[in-house]
Length: 329
Image (tube, rainbow, N blue to C red; front, top):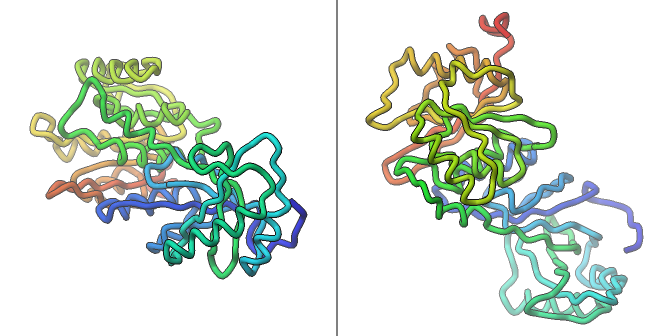
């Protein structure tokens, strides 16, 4: 493609995302973690970013459009698409919905107009390359489509299940909120249970280890990881006995009838999580702001996820270096 004067940030990626209304807050929180607080999540279903994130990481992102060019009219965009010359690859041109999409017939007409200018062999069913056309913020965009794959759906069929464990979509989003940039990051899930978050993390290439005080849970986590071809990285032990320092931690506080925590036990677990990492995602069945503050953490982002009458509070916390606990680090 020819060089052009940019009107939108370059490099430019357009992400299309979708979520159920019960997970809108979680989706927005994950997108903020992945793309920054300026990520557009006002129900539009798409956002611009200069960051290239693999769409399959998120349970909400459908695709990424790697923008090759942008124009102020469809006709000019079609002309630019004519610069594409394919010799060995088949292709398909697809309209990418961004906000208010035209009706079906108009979308197909746009695809035919742009696709007819591309020099190559069109293939509708199994193209080797997919090109996207989008109209956003008054600009027409053209580029390569990278589609997401619902990898987490396979993980629903774990050999070891637990009734109160996080669902795979929530677990995957939590892993992304904890570790939005995996390169060079070490993370830990010190109360990993059967390894729901741990499995999602390692499947995305996140360097995360797990631990749990319950030997049966650890056995289940190891079995689940091995079932999907991942090395066991889970040990038996209390969160209070874990040594070392990590970049991020996920603390899913126990909440079933057999694991009712006292206020003192909960505070001790939060303090241990803070000792392990400066970035901690806390999952609880109640808003525990006072306990989080008492542990020397500050909540920087949060959301609630509901499943029937059951509500989980997901809180991204950071070490409060200005508080009374600062001298302990």
